[in-house]
Image 1 (cartoon, helix red, strand yellow):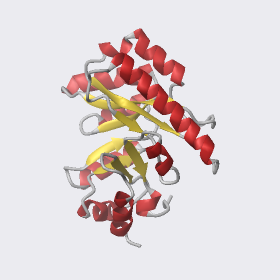
Image 2: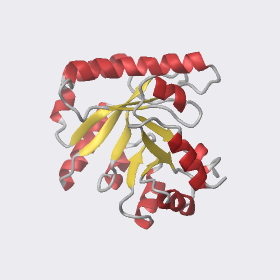
Image 3: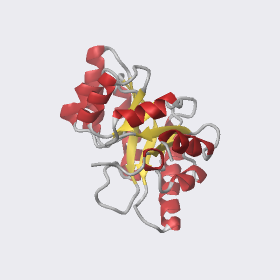
Length: 222
C-alpha cells in the first residue's frame, strides 16, 4: 500500500479531535511529500540534523514537532521554526529553550516528558518529579516557553494491560497537573501518547495526540 493509502487508513481510525503526528524520522523527503500532498501537515522528527535538513527543503507550512531526546547544545538550531517540542525531560532543557527563544523573540510550545515505562532507556520526569516541578513554580519564570501538556511512552511489550496501566498513570498525572495548575488555561490540553503499536489503547486512555510512523511510511530504513 502507498503512503497516501496508509495515511488515510490511519486517519479513519482516529476519533475526532485527535492530532496525528506523522513520524517521518529516517524516511526520505519523497515519502513526506506524498503524505503532505494527501493533506498531512504535522510531522515528527527525533534528530536535530535530520530535522534541519528536511525543514530547509520541504514545504514551509509543515508543522515540525521534535519528538526525540533533545540535547541542550542543539536547542538553538531548531528554535527558529519548531512548532512543538514533545520531549522536555529536565529543567535545564526548559531553561535553555527559554533562553534561546527569548533571544529571537519566540514563545515555544512544549510538552513535559513523563517516564511511565518500565524500560530504563526512556527519558523523562517521574510523575512525582513532574508534580514537584509544578509545585515549585519554577516553570512560571520561563516566559518564552508555553507548556501545552504532557508526553510519554509505554513499555515496548505485548502485554496490553501493562500498556494500558502505564497510559492510565500518565493520564492521571496530566489530570492532576491540569486541575491544580492550569484549570482555566485552555491551551494546556495535550496528552501526547500512543505510537503505531499501541495508539488505540492510548486513545482509550485519554490521548489527544498520537505519534505514528511505521503504519504510514512502512518500516524505517536506517
